[in-house]
Length: 528
Image 1 (cartoon, rainbow, N blue to C red):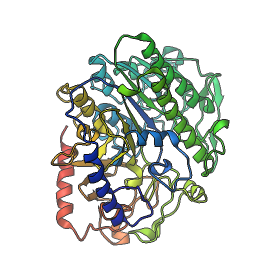
Image 2: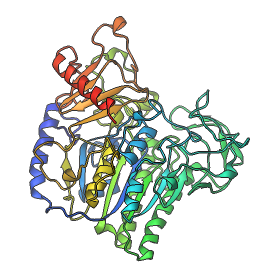
Image 3: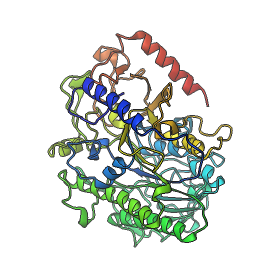
């Protein structure tokens, strides 16, 4: 078990410190025997936020995040939480369905704003499961899981991506609305955008329709570090800077409406944010609030969303009966890694955004190797903070291995209702961890990781195996290396507990571990 509490400390010390803290803290706040119930559940999913971006994870952070810090002080902070993928679409699929996205048609990459739905119509989601339990459900934010659009010739859009990447969507009939989205998958209400903020269509969506038609052409915009917006159509009321405030307002309105209803129904709010993903479009009131430049200021604005939700829960009287989760869909993009000694280090190159953030002395992914999209830890190990008054002990730290795919099984355990057959095949209940219980074995035996290009890794205990691939499999250099040309092993094996920065490849030294993990990964991939 490892912890980024002291990110500059030697790895063995980090491992020791985390273990001591977990042993000390857990017994002090041992929860009473849990009785199933129906607490309100709020999940805030940041976009491309690294663990090192939050000051509660990183004492050397250049970004003040008082609201995430408050959440951590009032709840539990996980130090070994992972997304099922190192990029957005597959992580969102896994979070809502409890199933790895590589089991679908999408074995690599992400969708764009016009891709058909990825979640199958009959697939159980967290929203549909909780709705059947009597919950009022809402999704506010970035969907990025596909929608069924209709083209101007009357035929359904059937392809996932254009031949040249993201499509502008000029051939979509926006008056027809769409199907297969949030309201078809268990959400009573939806407000948000189709995909990432840099992808068309640039317009708000409400339930199953476009709120205002996109009729203004927007050109492709690019700069070195902050802008990455594709060509497409924009509605007259839509501005990039206006999205985060609008989403905050919609989320607040949903909570206030639940308070006004006085019907006793619990609620589930899923709030997938558009920030701090590119484009970096910080509003004026947050500019200059960090010591990490424009990106740092955008993280401050992201943290303010968390604060707005917490304040609304306090004001409406819901706080004491609401489980709040704050996490990210993958690792951060604004990160640099001090690659002094590591396998294949001669091929390592700091990205432009990494070089930019290094000027401020800020490491978005702490001591981890890699960024968003990579199979290395920086691609998929994320912040994960839980506050659940009266159940999750305040101010605690857990080194349990958990995944975002675990939300569905955990919701079932919380409500005391078994999942339907076939639902959430890759989901594990982490309720014992939330209650700070000490089961005889880890709540999760293993975790499967997946990169942008489709590279797999499997983690079990202290070991992490990347079979049949050298390199990041994502954005970081080297992306891939040919052992026949470079020499060395065909895969990567790291003892994460001792080597959290993945510097020493032990693939050749531990053939039995390699064989065992290869077998386990094969079994996982072969089952549904």
